[in-house]
Image (cartoon, rainbow, N blue to C red; front, side):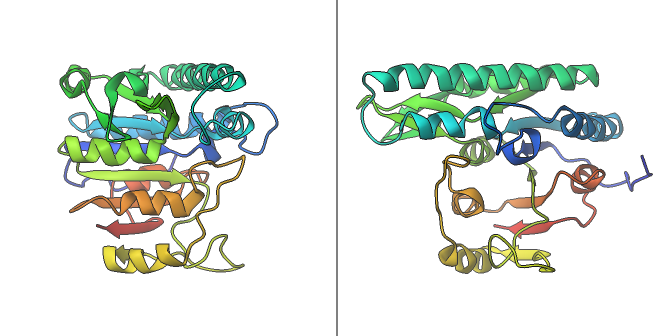
Length: 274
């Protein structure tokens, strides 16, 4: 691995979200992780932590092929749960637990103290949306030295309807609850473009402020498919608009070296100032 500029000021807490599109075979007919990609990301995260041991990392992961197809197949977002949807709900949750365990095994192989946490265990429903609970327990986990791993999950509303708690939403909830320095999104694209999918040879924006981002989001199509029930990049950016006074980096996590660049503040992908 090449040498990077590791002399930047140390952050207090970084939320790092690994998109399902890079850590799983998202278009696969069966759930499958990309162990080689995850292993590379783990190496870069390990390098960063060795130089900045006081920075706390909250690790999030998307659902990819482990979650989206099941939500789509069982139509979990369309009506109160009953009949086959009850089984589909449990299957989706079990699939996400399995994914978290597979990811944790790879990170542990890199000697990273990643601790998988069921997202619904730190959430409760409030006004038909999910809100964080058990914040003190999560802070204790961080202060002890663990790297908590949370991922997309399913929750229940008081009307017995399923609700998808995406890792993007988790990032926003955590950023509002913790003294977070930055949010970093590792995706399968080079950043934010004016159109998705981007045209050939198109270059991502290097810097976007909130007003610019709002204009871009308004033009995007938040279409849900069996491969992404959270609206893709449009859904991600709409979710991020809820943040204030926050820096977010969106970059291509499939390219080796990009994660460490994002972590040490070297230019990579698109920088959002919200």
